[in-house]
Image 1: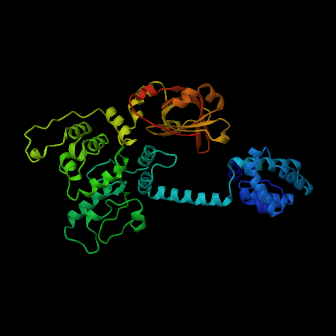
Image 2: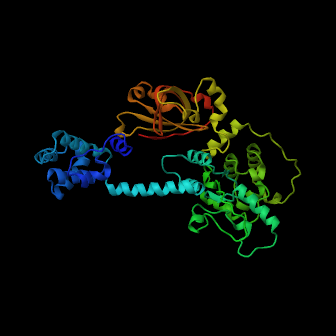
Image 3: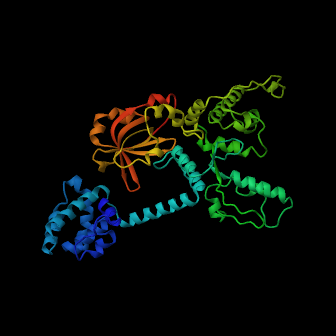
Length: 464
């Protein structure tokens, strides 16, 4: 792919033998797809379509069989007999072999490109809908819910916490704060109903992802209302609460035709036991009923089965008010119960200590020149070691400002394998590499700083 990209950017000339325009012109002289190898074999080596299809099958099996069999000699002889350079013939053979590791049909590439383009368009123009849909489709893909939420927040999406009073099972869309304020002000100035205008409480509230797009409401036009294009907010759904079943969540949603007045009212109407209430309290989902999380946990734990004889008996007991937990403790609870936090990023709390050791943030690294010796530290969110990487490991680090992509060469991987695999908070000392808009940190030394996270539970998505 590097030769193709270099040619596309004009960094090296486009060059390929005459007569192969039909096979190579569209990819600037570099064979990228399986079909092109088959075309080259037919045009340059005199293969029949049947022989070319046999070559395609041999491409995927050459590592198991130890070679391309008679097709290799047939390719070289056929190309040289037709006047092609021997070096070019050998290069084509090596590229054919390489396709067994990563090559695939052009039709697959076209289909994948369309999916990527559509996804990127939705993410660009409707980031709130995209985030909600991705969260509702979990578990999937490379990025965790925490990474998806952080990226959306960096792109201006308002994300609201799980709340038993308003959350559905799925993540939904809600009126953005600025639009709600604008609509409220307009309603105050126009108390009389306006023909063609929907009631404020029915506009843009509780919509599931993409419903607005399907209904043509992405940019609603309603006669008489103020024009605004603020994106909707995303309300996290009850599906985000660790350990909570969809059946229980639906029971909560179905019984709130009128607002819940307290945790006791919620438990009585939805038929929830103490364990379920504790799950909700741990996820900070009872905030609208009890306040901060410590109070939620206390109120949830206080609910005990009541004998039938005393069920309606009044309780004359003064409510206990607990102090709110420190931010660090709240963040630990968030990660344990939800796998993410809407509070500050954990490294924001450690930034002063990290800065004292001259660790740069992801945002600061963006301005670093190519070749600069730098040091970075972040939570490990992913490790990859593709079969084609020859032992190279790619690590993604996350801090409060963004992500840093780290390249660990095989020699360093072998030398510091334990640190590389076990670290949840990883410090990297290395060289900053910049090529156009692509930036990576080439690791020279690794250090495990996981103890600094304390009780914070983080997970990385590792692909080997």
